[in-house]
Amino acid sequence: NAGVTQTPKFQVLKTGQSMTLQCAQDMNHEYMSWYRQDPGMGLRLIHYSVGAGITDQGEVPNGYNVSRSTTEDFPLRLLSAAPSQTSVYFCASRHRLAGGPSYNEQFFGPGTRLTVL
Amino acid sequence: SQQGEEDPQALSIQEGENATMNCSYKTSINNLQWYRQNSGRGLVHLILIRSNEREKHSGRLRVTLDTSKKSSSLLITASRAADTASYFCATDTSMEYGNKLVFGAGTILRVKS
Image 1: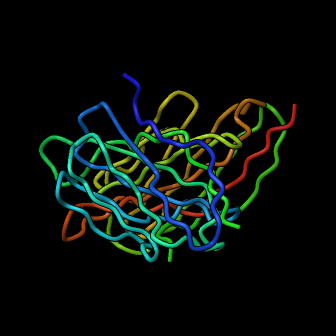
Image 2: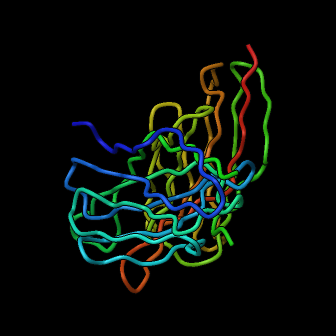
């Protein structure tokens, strides 16, 4: 299994440009999520999805869109990039624990380092 | 705001010593998880403790959970230089459309050889 994969690894954008960060997982996990990590801030949840067609906002959703048309893919779209979106972006996925409401541990992709000029 | 808050922000110890990191959170949880991140890399899961558990062990790791105080601690025994990394707690909470896993700001651990 490749696990969670993210593309690209690095990206430089100009203010106002749009782009899509790709994320895919081959573990058949229902749950996928996007985080951003800034120095000293830990990881902040942007959006998450509990299955195809179902998404919801996290802690910092503004400026980002997501959709989930398949179990495997969960792209993150930046509509109009701003310097404040300069960050490292991590995609993650996890599987529901049997017999309960919660999920098992989360598997992370290697990250996309985004710079907005 | 982030659900989990780690303490201390940074910790420096000698190889062979024990390292203790604490995590406090605000709302009821399904489980609490600890992750490790080496510089510039993705996060790796260490241990998960459910809300009805009080203590859990995995190798040199020991995690405790006190839901009445909304706090958890991670103990690394007999630390090694290779344990140098950032450690994060994350709380799993139920929401309308599924669960959120929210991370704290982390503790930077440096183990000196």
